[in-house]
Image 1 (cartoon, rainbow, N blue to C red):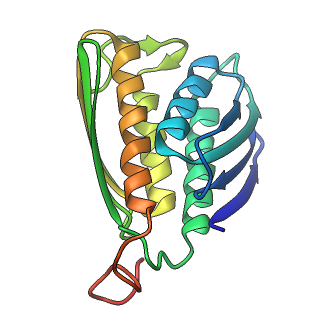
Image 2 (image 1 turned 90 degrees about the horizontal axis):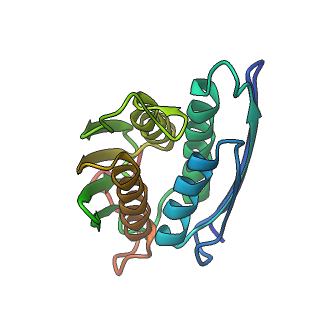
Length: 193
């Protein structure tokens, strides 16, 4: 089974992530930030992966570190669960509409972490999370998992934009980690990373 458990403890946060790539989408996210938990659940359910996240930290003065560290630990857990990535499709993409909003996500699990993010939420914050932290969450996840991601969104309602992004990321990830008809490592180099 492709699964992993990673923990990280700093002076600011404590995060534990369990992930299973081969189970139907069930999420138990407890970060202390309801909106973040809702987004992570959307990603897991539509990405058909089991995800358990327990995170705590200083939520009164700054949510930055907790959101960032959840992204870091989720990325590390995903990387560990993939192992050498033998037999995966490697690439995945999705377009998700949500009312007036729409998000497009294209992923390469080729081992090189990189993020192109266009279409950040318009308001200064969304349900208690500073707007720039949505992009930073995905940056932290992608850099630590070795994912190249292109994320684009548009729309009027920031909640809808974010939810479309997380759902599209989950769907694209599900396609990328799925078993391919091709055997071996999906790379002309013979390795990922």
